[in-house]
Image 1 (spheres, protein in one colour):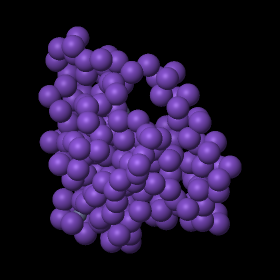
Image 2 (cartoon, helix red, strand yellow):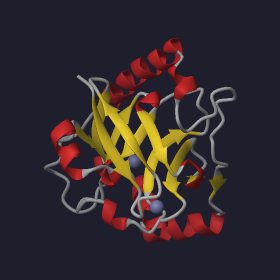
Image 3 (cartoon, protein in one colour):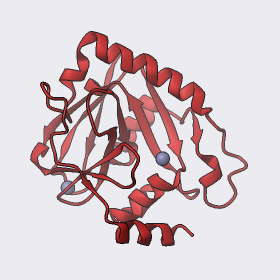
Image 4 (cartoon, protein in one colour):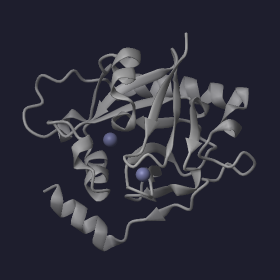
Length: 199
Ligand SMILES: [Zn+2]
Ligand SMILES: [Zn+2]
């Protein structure tokens, strides 16, 4: 049975719901890019003690915006295709996608979701990613194999393409599958500053 998980940016301007069903992965990502994102946006408190970001990856049309669509902004932190979406009003990190809706998926930042509903609907994470980038003692963290996650990701992406759901994704234009906000890319100075932070 599917259930709705509400989310909102810190100031409440951008809000919506995420439909939680059987098709989704709740993970904690410790990669340097996710850590850098939290610092770049000025929200380091979304990171846990080991530098982990709580994420839920699911089918692209499971996220619905209720308000603040015109306040969404997005950035490529690196040369990688990952597009990081945040609320332009208060810089709350919200979603990860890639730069085109042709490859359909959405990863939602769980720190922006209602805490009680999140606990009830998702429970504990299925595993941790990029544990080698974690801060401090990460020996107790249960790893999720990237191959497992990618296999599940691929099944969902194919379903989104076959069902036409990728044209119902809130973050991409239904016709062109281009992002609804213009992506910007960090300057080399900003990237250097983030790199220096993490060393
Ligand atoms: Zn806001
Ligand atoms: Zn990450």
